[in-house]
Each structure stands twice: as structure tokens, then as C-alpha cells.
Image (cartoon, rainbow, N blue to C red):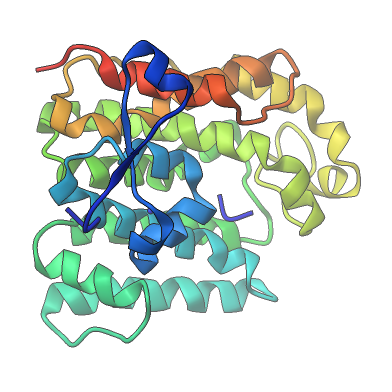
Length: 288
């Protein structure tokens, strides 16, 4: 489970949200770039949140989502950890080449990523941090402890939120809060993905709580661990100081909060209308 104004024009989808006066800009599929299409298909949560970014920043945010997807699928698509590390190294080199002013690699995500880095929209150092954090997924012994899981999530999903925040002009003082918000989104994603990852012979739960082999053999055995990790999730950060232009970087926290509450009660997480409305409502809250 691979747990994106780039939009030339847009339209307003009219539906349940219109009854409350909310209008959500949503591009039609043919108008999406390759990165936008990847984001919409593979990371619909972040894609929805990205629609609330300023139009001029949206395409770079789609590109960031697509890059994150490529990192996430590096281990999934690889037949062994060595191949996964090679894929991650390839993406790290894409970032480094852009930062060094070298030519772009011809790839539907690498080329726009190169352009966004050279334009100063996406922070190369932050992207490299995201790639380095993913290397833990290639470790055969897995994640040892709760602390190691949280560190992994701070670098991956948390790193994503920081890069998104920088792109959207979030105050530097709020970047740690965004990283915490991203980490919580990542935690919810890992817990939701346990059955899917087990089907791939993988487990990202801490070994100190349950052996990966037990989860892979019987994913339902992880239920008590999932409930515990959700119930004992780190504190939720205060993002009320985010300016409206940067709110898209923090909106995924809305979904993470809802997911972790469900997971702590042992309930399945299925995306529905109320999740979408929760994001829309949060986006309408008064901001600077």
C-alpha cells in the first residue's frame, strides 16, 4: 500500500456541501497534470486537502504528493530490500541533481519535481529527509520500538508536512507543529494499512509490541496493538496560527484525528462523506 495555478482551469462540484454554502474547487480529470492524476488516484486524502491551497501553489503540491507516492511504493514494488534501496537512491539523486542544476531525468514525476526544486517551490533538503526516512522500510528487522516508529513517521509523513508548509509560506515557528501533524497522519495511515501490508509480507508495527511474523501470518492479531498505538498517539499540535494560504499543509490533521479516534475504539476506517465535510468545515474556519 503506497501510503498529489498547476490546474489550468477548474470547476465547482455541487453536492451536499453546497447546502451549507461551501464550495470546493475540484479540477476535472482531463485538466490534471500527470502528478495531479497520481495524487488523486493514490493519495486522495492529501489531494482533497491540496485543493484548498492557493491555485498558484497547487501544482507544486501535487508534485510533492506524487514524489511521496513514488517513495512509498519503492518498497512495495521491489522484490527485495536491496532493490527498494536502489529505487530510493534514484529518487534522492533526482532531488540532488535538481539542487545542483544538472539536467532533469525524463520521468512523469521526476521532471516536474526537478522544475519545482529549481523554481524554489520545493525544498531539496526536506525532500532528501523524506527519502532518507523511507530507508527504514528496507530494514529486514523492521521497526524496533514505538520511539523508532514515531521517528520514522516524523521523517516521512512529518517531513512531507514540513515541505508542504514551506511551499505554502507557513511561519517557520509553526513548522514543528506541522511535522507533528504529519506524523499523526502517518501513524493513522500505518495503522489503517496493517492488513494490506501483511498481505505483502510487510509490517511497520513496533517489534517490541508484536513480532512482525505474527502480524504477517494473522493480521487480526495486531488489533490490540493498533488500538493501543492509536489511543496513546502523541499530542495533537495547535495549528490555529496557520495563515489561510498555508492551511492545506495542516488539513490532513483533520482526517488523522478522526481516524485515530476510530482506530482507538477498534473501529474500521472507511472514507465517507462526513470525512470530506470535516475537511471542508476546517478549511472554512476564520484564519489570518
